[in-house]
Amino acid sequence: MKVILFDIDGTLIKAGGAGARALNYAVKAMTGHPEACQSCQLQGATDNANFENAFKTGAGRKPTRKEMEELTRKYVERLPHEVLAAVKNKKYQKVKGVAKFLIKLSGCKGVLVGLGTGNLKTGAFIKLKPSGLMKHFAFGGYGCDSHHRSEMLKKAVERAAEISKTEIKQREVFVIGDTYRDVEAAKEAGYHQGAVLDGFGDETLIMRSNPELAVRDFSDMKPWLIWLGLEKDPKGVQRGTYICPDSPIEHAHYGRTGTDLKHIDARLKVLRTAKKKITGR
Ligand SMILES: [Mg+2]
Image (cartoon, rainbow, N blue to C red; front, side, top):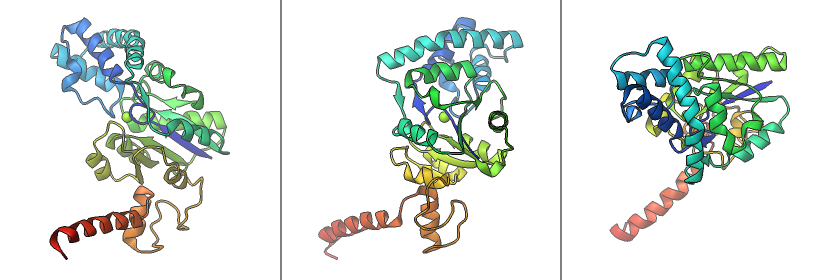
């Protein structure tokens, strides 16, 4: 059994800032602060943590439990409006290649596809609705399960085990996200980690968190399928086991990016020719 968990924002879709606008709206209604989210780092954190931080920015103190409930209610009520506005303004997008990738995964035997997101469950469904991708997800871990991403991921795996009625080992779980926080949470839980570079995450921070696989998006499924062990590695090795097929550097590069160093060689050739034109050597 393989369990694949997808983050939502920046990994499946980009909702054109709908979440931040809905949270700003809710915080403004309660504290008067118009742009609380501007000074909060929302990406990669769970909704509850974001709500608390945004409220704190607005009110200058932590929210009480009752205030958190009210804030959450206001956010969830406002979110459909903001998502719809993003769709209307053509700011709502699916991450490149993700729809085809999910169709491919749903046709694979022994694969369970779920959500691993910091969004509240209701918020997750509202954000995903216009994408039409919801049908691919049978279960998930959500921001309402835990403040901690790694705990949320474990909860998703627990649900996958319930659905499949099998025990799921850590090495059978693959987490796909777009920030270093997704990578770190997956590592903390002992799961495989793959990162989308074209999401909301800072690329330097993602690379520093050292995921097993880092790819721009899903337009080329091959590196993802090889990483997931659903397609044979042309170099004859498994992801994560860096036995050298050619050279250690070449293999490590292939393991990280799924692309061959020969592409870099080709670029270097172009640069060398350009340099020769100018310097004569
Ligand atoms: Mg994300």
